[in-house]
Amino acid sequence: MRIPDRIINYTLWKASSDYFTLKRLRKTVKLAYRTDFYRRKLAEAGVKKIRSIDDFITNIPLTQREEISLASISPYDLLAVDPTKEMVLFGQTSGATGGHSVPVFMTKKEFKKAIKMAMRLPVFKHVSSRDRVCLLFPMVRTFAGQTAAAMVEHVGALLASMGTRTNINPPKQVGKTILALKPTILGVVATDAFALAQLLKDWGQNPKDIGVQKLVIGAEACSRNRMKRLQEIYGAEMIFNFAGQNEVGLPGIPCIKGNMHFPSIAMFVELWSMDGNHRVSYGERAVPVITPLFKKAMPILRYWTNDIVIMEDGNNCPCGLRLPLYRILGRKGAEIHAANDSIVMPIELEDILFKATIDGVWYQIEIDDETVTIRVEHREKKEWKELEKEIVENFTGIFNQKVQVECVPVGTLYDYTAIRPGKPISRIVDHRKTESIPVLEGA
Image (cartoon, rainbow, N blue to C red; front, side):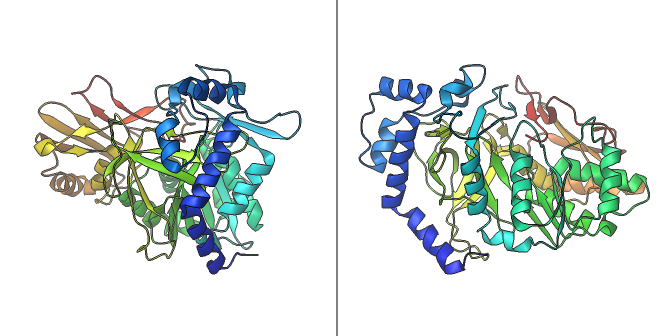
């Protein structure tokens, strides 16, 4: 049974109140004291009592990814419950940032509770027991696929958990299964969705003929225009983009208007400047420091996400969901210096690129002192010249350097017929930096 909107709105109001937030923060700190890691960390910081939210922010030290990675400590140092007394699930992050893979624990009970809570959100009224759902999210290591599968099970729809492209389920097998099942909902990593579309076209099939009504994408960053292009390719009525972070949960929840909201019901967030020296306000670029309010097996305090985001008041979003708007720009360190000393993020360059109607899987942008070279896959060779001209015009004024564009055949930059590679692939290479900007598929 769906929860009435009036109850949801009351819950959101309650979650946003200082009294409720402080109560949950104090409980989370108490749980954290049960772990070996936080017992040491909080003792070193001299933390004894949390009397206010300001107390929490001032006295609780930040938690950095590096210090809780599997390379730094035993995963059991982060466990706050006794696994012999209740069922505990284990996962880990992809390790896309500096190779630091973080362990993640959840009790079976809190996992189910989180699913039940998420399913109360308005976006899920578009999923019903009449749907046929194919999930192409990672089903191992991270919780992406398991979480999506549990949501579908909650609704009672037909479920095909196919996972990402592996030896067990290689791309051609995935394509054949999709053609046979004709899903009404496709849950998929954006790159895999583009790859699947090209595979189908190789077989003379139009992706629009599958009958996908809703696309649910996640597990990698995707700009708004790139999402729009996917929606056009599949002829879907709706497209939703989830932003998940295994350590904290789902900081980005989609709405039917194409925006992403931050779940202040379940998470406390602080917005800090990119140098970490001061707090910033809505509308500014910031690094979110997140404390989940309902984690039991592995509480985490003031987690420096290393993302760069812009948060804004969500009260005016036409979807009616009164939660802050949350726009992820990328990881800290991926900033690119452009014209007039401005800073752009990879996701912003991708958004500019996909103003054009691109029909491929991969692109690559190389930046050096004098030239920006953009290579993009596109299926129809007769359209290359016009497409190259359009992309150059779209990038005019973004860089001080000359911009040159080259269209290449599909499959040149990325082998969409192969299983998923096990290492990061760079879409953007800034030769003015010492390192390229990695993009890990299916993070």
